[in-house]
Length: 92
Image (cartoon, rainbow, N blue to C red; front, top):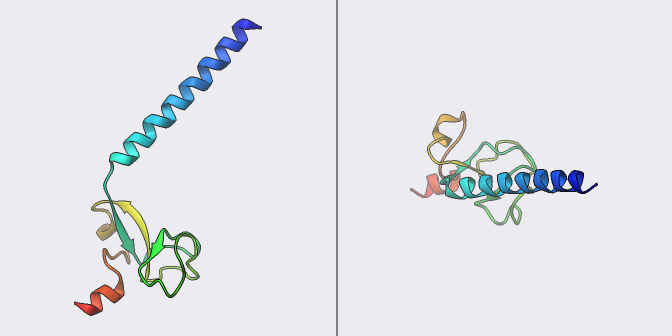
């Protein structure tokens, strides 16, 4: 019983360490807001606060007001992705 307990403890410990290492790598990665690619209910937030309060509340796919955080430099490679909201573009 003790050997099984030790083996199980080691397995769980290694899984926790791998999870923590993954979180550290994710924290180091720079991201950017990519507007116009979020699916309904899958957005990270919105630039137009009157539409909804924030994450997970997008009501339609590819709304140019809602964004998803993506690794820096990838938004321009995604069809329909914009690094600024359509409102910000119109103000320029």
